[in-house]
Image (tube, rainbow, N blue to C red):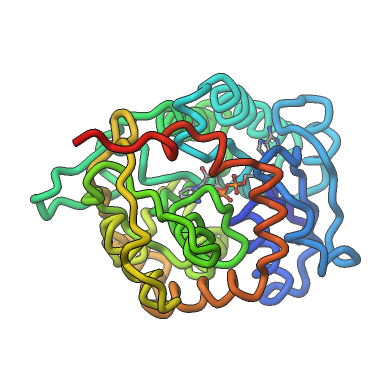
Length: 337
Ligand SMILES: NC(=O)c1ccc[n+]([C@@H]2O[C@H](COP(=O)([O-])OP(=O)(O)OC[C@H]3O[C@@H](n4cnc5c(N)ncnc54)[C@H](O)[C@@H]3O)[C@@H](O)[C@H]2O)c1
């Protein structure tokens, strides 16, 4: 089996490549990644002799024509994925997440790949009321509320439309907030861990009550692998970790694991249009793929924090390159209420 993983130098894509090397030793793996601010080949350094790496943009049609050819499977992780950056500048999100998906899907149709798996997000469904018990599932209508979510929603529609129109043999997974090793110190768990390890304030948006579902990245990789192995063409699977936590609860848990003072918590201005709650029902993935999360939030968070403790040079260099914590105005502005 020849597989092309796009966005394989990113957080989840690189974890997926490591997962495949370990669990699918017969696969011949290639990675395409544009190495944007979020991509880092260091995540694949230990696989240098195992995986073919190509620096390329998924919206470059001639490059995708070349790199998709000959593959049986394409798994698309490549995207701009940081919500706050999409609010500051939506352009690159629309270009990669929409046009890039179109270009990659068309190359996959041309070269008759056997499966095109598209990795998407629960953010396409919008926001749930804080005090409701509602969950997103495969039937939930799309109601994206950030430029990032809108671009991912569009990409899902393109993949489905190409399935109907051109018989693209696709599957899609919509997952919740991932966390784990190699996460970018621009996302909540990694930001809080990095700040706590450096004794810097942990920035909490608004009142800290916004709730997300947390999915350990290894569990997500296993769900994608199962969707490819057992999933039916044309199907979508919702994948969640079954762990709903508010931002404040995540900060408190990180500080507790590291034995740091809760006084490091600092409230900052809320994200514009901040979605209040996401929760996801994975029962269809459980029924059809036999998937369920295996890592609890407490276990996963402890593993993640340990990984951050042991890989300080990597994330310090990465955050310096990104300048994420410094260039984000939202982190600088103290909440006024
Ligand atoms: N991280 C999460 O919690 C989460 C949750 C739900 C869904 N997702 C989805 O999972 C996928 C992977 O997310 P992630 O957290 O690993 O993101 P990430 O930002 O860490 O990685 C994205 C990777 O894509 C690459 N890339 C960006 N634009 C590209 C382009 N035009 N051509 C080729 N490569 C390009 C980047 O260099 C980077 O390596 C994304 O599609 C994202 O929407 C992520």
